[in-house]
Amino acid sequence: MRTADGGGRRGRLGLPHGAVETPVFMPVGTAATVKAVPQETLETMGVGGGGARIILANTYHLYLRPGHELIRRMGGVHRFMSWDRPMLTDSGGFQVFSLSKLRKITPDGVEFQSHLDGSKHFFSPEHSMAVQIALGADVMMAFDECVETPATWERTRESMGLTHAWAERSRAYWVEHGESVPWFGELGGRTQSLFGIVQGGMYADLRRESAERRVEMDFPGYAIGGLAVGEPREVTREMIARTLEFLPKDKPRYVMGVGYPDEIEEYARMGVDMMDCVLPTRAGRHGLVFARVDGRVERLNIKKLEFAEDKGPIDAGCGCSVCGRYSRGYLRHLFSSGEPLAATLLSVHNLNFYLDTMERVRADLAAGRHMPTE
Image 1 (cartoon, rainbow, N blue to C red):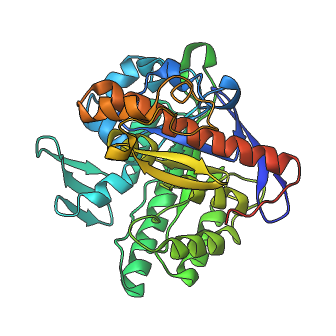
Image 2 (cartoon, rainbow, N blue to C red; image 1 turned 45 degrees about the vertical axis):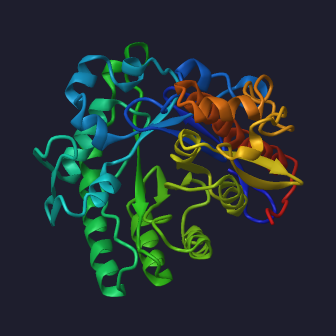
């Protein structure tokens, strides 16, 4: 990792399915698909047409449907979805957290009901690792508990202790079972990495304790979890900054589940290497698109009547295929008419916007420029 003034740094992750230049934004492919966007489009979008270099898949959702053993038999999630670039799988912890009325937490793990059919399931740290190993992603996440917001200091520390115990168990299982991934075929024998997750809620002292205890375990990389769950943006920023102080500078640092384009730029310039968020495609499916106006990120609601006869692109400075071909007026027509193409085109633009934002940040850091985001 090479750090520029202000904390931002350039890096390169060597993973079984290729190299990833950081800082990087990772599109979310929850059910082995980035919603509404084909894989071939993901591979060619962004500045220079290099596309998304790494995406996410979701352990919880793939475990429930179609099942991790089926995906293992299909050759792993890469072959299953025809994606030959790097991939990260989360542990399922956040999805279980979101099922607050359908779960029961014990020191052994979490019993929960499927949101699909109400069937009962149990995730332990070991089972989460087994599922992720079966999926075959390049990077896996340790099983953790994400505490609700707001939560008391005592409740947060109790949850953090559970996450610590589960991290130890996740790491032990990974060391014993997760070193090789033989179903990669020509990539057989390559290894999967496991990242530990720092929790601690909105308490700086707990964030420090969690980070220090996680670093003691010597994971290949570290994630900052439990943020962007309803707290103010300034609190998110403070918790990230406080946590980064105690994470190794020679290993990747990943903030999970953030954020708007201006936020991911800010965090990258603080020294975060990896980020993901469902927002680009979710916003697109609801008619919200991003544009840069006078150097600032603006959020445009394409459903508004003011765009009905607008002949211009979403963003005049954007080089994506959508802005190069379609007008705001046409995109509004598609969305208002309920045409499925609207979700695809708006999602493609938003993903391009995110990827281009990170490309610009990487270029600035490579040149030694630290530019404020405000």
